[in-house]
Amino acid sequence: MKILILSSQAKNTGSTLRAFYLYKFLKKMDNEVEYITPPFKSMVFMLDFFLSFFYYFFKILNKQYKIIIIIKPYPNTVIPCLLLKPRGAKIIIDIDDLDYGYRNSFISKIIKFFQSFLIPVADFITTHNNNLMEHIIKNYPKYKEKIYLLKQCVDFTIFKPGLKTDKKLKKIYKNKKILFYMANMNIASYFEDILYALSNIKSDFVLFVVGAGPLFNHYKNVAKKMNLLQKIVFLGECDLKTTAFYLSAADICLVYYKNLPVNKYRASMKLREYLSMNKPVIANNVGEISQFKDFIYMSGPSLQSFANEIKKRIKYLDKKHKKGYKFIYRYYNWDKEAKKFYEFILNCF
Image 1: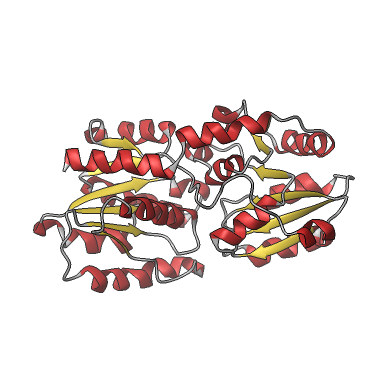
Image 2: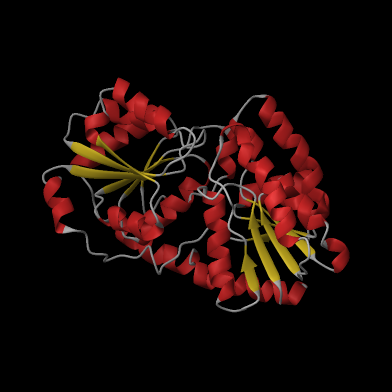
């Protein structure tokens, strides 16, 4: 079956990683699955969206597909794909966030306006979060019977327990707790809050930060102003295997969301990846996080509660995270999830 997978966002974003994983595991079952890698990294003023419109338009202009899966409903992907509907293509739109909810600005209003017109062109909707599924059905009732929960999962060929950490790395940071955080450094990463949470910790630690993005330099400057730069290793953008290598050295991993309505609809890829490598995780109780409470060190929703939990867990950890690996492997495994989704597509289309 000819299937095309596209990501509306830039190549260095979590949603594009979701698109790639879906492609990688569907490709195992069907050689006709295609994926067009986004041509640009995140740009200021969302310029990558504008430029990629023309890229995708000419890439698919003369193509024919049975199914087109679009991760995030934006004009740069949805409008070019509409040209293929008269040729028999069915469009599945994956909604993995409330993109307009992170800002209270003119840009948010534009995003919400465009998406209100783009979402209804889909023949089917997928999403990764039960709260988000309910929100979509409430706002677009016609999808009540046309929506599928496509979970946020882990690639266990990369993120798995038992990876060997370079001895030199451990030697360099001997007697220090290695904390770990990864994210696309944008408005939704809340890295400034994480810096605040670390600012009053007296214990000796180092924080590995994996990720780049539009606010990367801003966050480095904030860390410098807070006198934390000497305790942070900004690794920048890393490929997946390099990310897993640094993650394997971590003593504690961090997940933090502001207690805002928009974060009720998120599904943390990094939390799942941390647990898949048997790592202790500190996270605050916002949105879906409580679903993992038996396997993580969960603070209250507030930033201060999160900071207090870090102080506590730097000094003491039990082994509750050890059960997390089996839980993630059983319920959030891309290999299993892609097989179920492929069977669903075959039955529906």
